[in-house]
Length: 311
Image 1 (cartoon, rainbow, N blue to C red):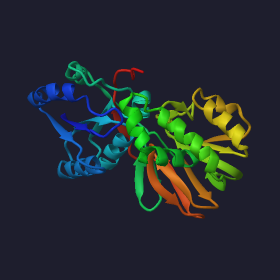
Image 2 (image 1 turned 90 degrees about the vertical axis):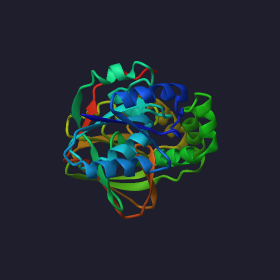
Image 3 (image 1 turned 135 degrees about the horizontal axis):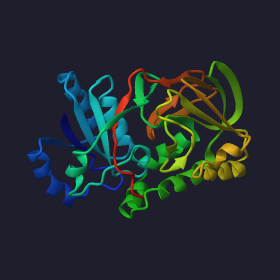
Image 4 (image 1 turned 90 degrees about the horizontal axis):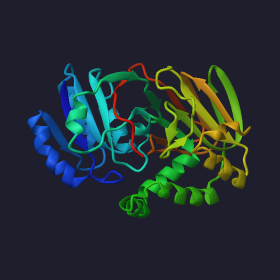
């Protein structure tokens, strides 16, 4: 199987430059190509081009970066049935690696790569302006605004340098708590339609974690063929903060204002423009009255079995 190591130098913790410099000759000797991302969407475009040019060749993309980097990589390989993904977590959140496992960027990496095995996992396909895929989760509302603000901030880069990248989400959580305006929502899931007032956010999950370890969907299973939909609604700002903080342990599900349903497909329609994220990456504004549609993709994602993420 062809192996290509893909590195995002702008991901949360940045590259371990010394380790990478030492490993590049070993990668090349082992027949592993090394790609360094030059700009946003570069990884996605290069992977798409490679897959288009090698439609029948099996390949393992070893992705060093955060959840956004993996989001780009998986979208680049969408539709290529011979792709396996492995993760070297180097972002702020690392929820992909938190669920699926991750590899350390060190001199034992090649040894671990030789022992990898892959398993098929569910993947989300969603549509706004165009169809894309998400690995871990996606959603609309408060959490999307927090991610959007955090990813654009200079504070994030500073905290990442201090190995405190997770704190950036706390900073912007408090900011958005003061300014965010809840919305009304209609969802169609599990063949039922429900309306909600004063909605703070809606999350569509493939696996339990998001936002750097928050357990938004404690029972989500990437092999069950179902999406876990969470709607947080009908809360004052003070109680919403309490509920949101409880997401870290997954205990938010005990609140009556937290609605959850499982479905292979879901449509969400808001009464105003709301921001949407996928794997923590901004996907712009969903116009009022337009449906955000998501479902379990027909194609699976093959993920290499790896070491548990070292917290």
